[in-house]
Length: 335
Image 1 (tube, rainbow, N blue to C red):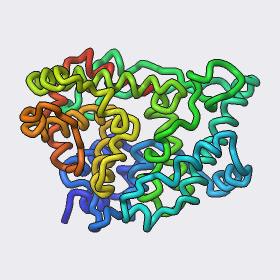
Image 2 (spheres, one colour; image 1 turned 90 degrees about the vertical axis):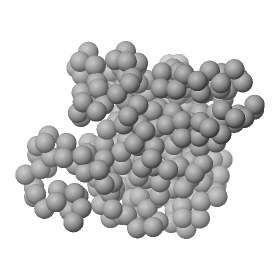
Image 3 (cartoon, rainbow, N blue to C red; image 1 turned 90 degrees about the horizontal axis):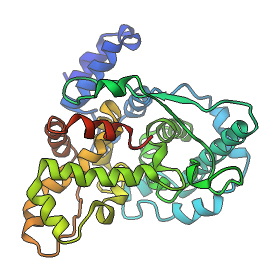
């Protein structure tokens, strides 16, 4: 019997207590979510929705967005969807291009509708609380625990305001959405989880300026210098800054790195303890390949294949070494 089996046997009392979520996170860290060889699990999408604190979504709400037809971002979306995880047979077998297009187009409409509501004064910008770390394994500075961060929503290319500050469709969102569709049992479930993720966890990744991604890349360089100074110095001496090799990994939370079942395991961990830890996961992948990189006079970091459990193990160890000020920047970089 796994830790997850024991957790599920505890009953509904866990659903209303913070202790229940802490136990669920511990279960994910120890065992992961049981899956078949394709990475499929009937529990995964429900657990993701719980960890992301996504509110219930009526299927009709999603369908109403789909019925609005092509959004202003539709051409950009169609230019990306056919290229999404093209070398992954598992994804191509389970998720159609039309399904991915509908979810991304619905997201684009929801973002635009929300932006228009704000600029017309119908609703005020949301605020977001950044919680403390779940346990001492991932230290969270006290100054961050009560911070409230404004979220700006909009659509890329909108006539109102600076487009670089608007959350909208940007290239790479197709890959970020892919694991949600693969893990979900319906497009509406995938939409709910994906929407929650980009709106509350990483809005800075999908603004027109992608400022959150650029902050994350700078942090990858800093973190690597802390946990492995020799490897950091070697890469920098060869002109290998994170902005050159890690942009897709930051933007997509490593969804761009096959195989997909390993991505799902990594995301179980990231949604349990915080997507900000993806920066540590990227550094962990570099350290796992350090011998090869150090021996090369022209190192080109290649994160394939992803080994989720090993990456998580390294990430847990690295988290203890990160100074409080750097960890605070990690927590806030994607907001």
